[in-house]
Length: 113
Image (cartoon, rainbow, N blue to C red; front, side, top):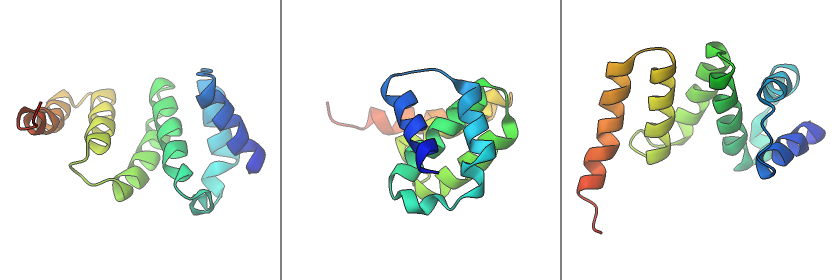
């Protein structure tokens, strides 16, 4: 598992786009492991796999990762709102995506500049 994590780190740090490789690493290794041993890095791994799965049109893996990410982030956090908006746009539920993103936009209207 360690070499898998190192590959993902390398892809992330170098902005290397190997989406299908990320999905393969998830399917063959990471999905079978207890990711809690990664500590906080678990969340960046899940986010990386989530985004790759969207770009590879793999809704099953995207949903699997999003469910775990939603357990971690508060429902109103910008990260959660962004990830959920991406997912609902991906599956074609544009009204739901618009509703979710409006939450973020409304919150930003009240922020001090």
